[in-house]
Length: 303
Image 1 (cartoon, rainbow, N blue to C red):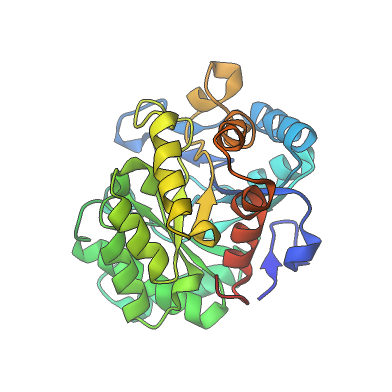
Image 2: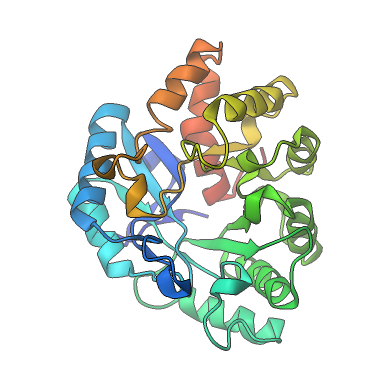
């Protein structure tokens, strides 16, 4: 399926220039539970960073996984991307239960699926379903509905699914729920796997045919990048280069470079340089920073 961006363009993989960030937030607001810093709200700073990443690291496409109840603002996100000169793919779906909007997704998978399908067909149309959350080794009842509805909506619309596996946990159950509902594994990206030191889980996700997201690169409070590199190299050594997606998951203004954070360019610059220094060749870097993400979004080729 072609890749649908917020600009209204429908692109094939060859039409997307440059590198891809597979999990970011151009606009997000998770402050309703008392953390006033849990937002990305500085549109000018975000646009400037993305423009710099385009100039310095050939950034061409950003996947914004800001779903329902996360303060999404599609018009603002599209305007930021246009100002920066990059394309953006927007999302719909439910984060983990703590952040579900009142009454959503409900207890009916069919009704929740219908809601997502209608969301995908209206307004500034989403081009991916995510980040679909669960918050432990086993999804709660509401999170399970969100995951199963996401699979149903993906099957109905041809979109791919990205998950939020909280601190990396529960990824295998997410994969089982989504594939058990009929969604092909190569349409699924299991999130935040760089936050769990479990190479067996990483290999199992990849071996099933899904994508493993190392998508919180630069967030040193959770995991030092040195550990991320070791986990990533282990997956490459196991032969799964075509199953990895990379990103920063900028989810608060404090992560912007203007506020002293690593910024949107971190995974594209310093982290990529470290991978190259550790022997990751140019062809493999091309998979990690472009080809895998486009194949996941497009869904026409199995890894």
